[in-house]
Amino acid sequence: MTAPSRLYFWDTARAVLILLVAALHTAAAYGTVTPWWHVRSAETAKLFDLLLSVLDGFLMPTLFFIAGCFAPGSFERKGAAGFFSAKAWRFAPTLIIYMITLLPLMAYVGYVSRTPEPVGFPAYLAAWLASGADLGVHLYSTVADGMATRDIMSPHHLWFLVVLTGIFGGYALWRTVFPARPGHADRPEPADRAEAARRRPVRLPMLLAAGCAMAAACILIALGVPDGGWIRATALVMVQPTRLPLYVGYFALGAYASARGGLSRPWPLVAAYYLGRTFLCLGVVGLLAALATRRPTPEDIPGRLSRTLAASSYHVYLLHMPVVVILQYLLLDAALSLYVTFGAVWLGAVVVCVLASRIWRGGAARVRAKTRPRATTV
Image (cartoon, rainbow, N blue to C red):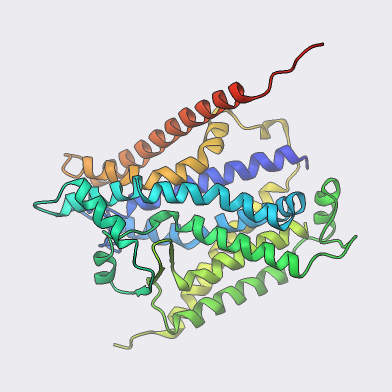
């Protein structure tokens, strides 16, 4: 398989997953399982609970898997310091800017929607920024906790960037402490990587073992932490402890695959839940891997829409949640059915984010063109 074909596929897969993340956050306003969501519709439907459960089962672990797939190649090109610094410098400024601009604006929209006499945005922003001085570690494990934390500084959906940066740092450290041996099959030359992966594919027993290990780790953490619980460590880090083994595990699985080519808790049900979540995601990852390795055809070249969505996917992820919340607020009292409102918010958010991405990328391209040294003739 040619490299462009593989990149086209994974770019498209990542874009589709991010569109589904936007759908998940859109559905949060219309189901019953997220009462802490910023803007809540008075009308709800169980169908959105089902949609949330299904999407939440595989979206983020699969995105970590895709990140893991591309990590070995990037590490080999840049080395440990260059690899980690590139990731950190890509994510950190974006995260900081969003946490003092769009994220407080998004939270403020939710605050206004539920507060009879809200304060102005400057006062709200001052309180938001002041809450960032809390450097403690907190566990939020109840609905009341979730509602109480809606108006304090946090990365919200950008927790993904924080966790991914930490995993990138862990990967760089691992490869530094345990470097691949020269000539080892786990570190083929770039031109031979696809062939090496075909010679030593990840077999089904390895996938099953990885799935069982991740599910077991989730179950062990769930013995002490509720599934819906979040840990907040300073204003920057927000993560669900029971999901962390999936995020780390699927990233590692992606990197490995790339390099290798009453009763308070009914524990049997908890075990089945985590096994089901893990293997649902494993099934999605396996399907994507099978599709990515098929023989390319001329039809594999993506169309204009696919290329646009792929190029915009990172910006769609960054922007979609504030846009979704704002659109949910604007349509809160609209005389539309719940399903039409969901579709309008989802599609509207995607369109706004893609247009914003195109404007940003076009402006960045013009800046690069103006600053690029011109060739001189002698």
